[in-house]
Length: 216
Length: 186
Image (cartoon, rainbow over all chains, first blue to last red; front, side, top):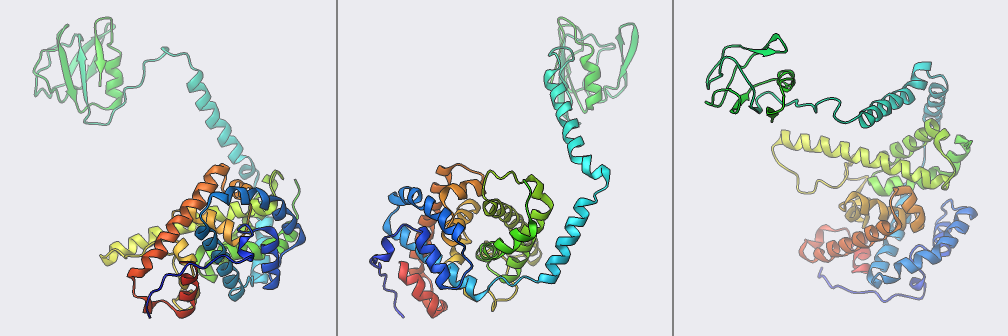
């Protein structure tokens, strides 16, 4: 078999817009499909507007659309909808029964969850900015640099000992287990830490004073 | 708005089934999709507000279910392909029970449509199989009218290009009746 491309000239019936109501209805009815008058009326009203939309389409695309329509009709005829009536009715009845007799917590679950979510989001949006420092949570392993923070004793690179830090009169213990920089942690210098948990970083944030800065 | 589920099912089952058949490519998946669409209707009937026609709403449900099923099938297929150690060449065609039952669908233009992106594929089904108006398609797919038009145009253009590429395939592999149809539009 040899391939011979051939463009079919549109016939008079092809001149109608793709899927026009009359054509569709008649096609489907001729094939014995279940097409109701209401559908035809609705399609008819829409067909004029659709023809305008498809006016810019090349003719071969319109022909392609028509061919798709014909093949859909043929397919639906060869495989008509034959629902398993009994099975479907049973499922339908079970669905409706389950829907009508949902436990009270299921009935309110979605609305309650949505309300709580909205509340949380709303509060977080409406909360006055600056009332709390922004969270500095970071995965373990991220580096945190602290500048201008007074750390005693000075943390050196390779330190693994726990270092006590004075904090409002209370020695606040931050386990600096992995100091990266070799700079002494004295005011005016920068110390780089790694391997701190989010909680530890939050703890470091507490040490922020004018002149000190904690940053990721 | 109160809906009589039984009445709506009787009225619209066949058209939803037809769309499901064209989308999925085999009668078993079509049966399941159509049935599931109406079960969703039974559960969610109270959410229908009557701003669109009921069948447009049903098509919207069907499209969501079909997209979900297709994604599930795709995931399953990918897992199998990893297990087997080789990637299939034509993975986009939906799963089929046996080759015989879906031979006709595979031989039709709709099997080419199945390889288009979701949006284009579904818009083309609603337009050319279900003959919905552009407004109705926009409602069912929950997207603007212009998007529907571009999806249909781009989809048809891709389809036309795919069919043009048939010059390179072994024509003897294509069933005679299907070839007549395809040649008709080339």
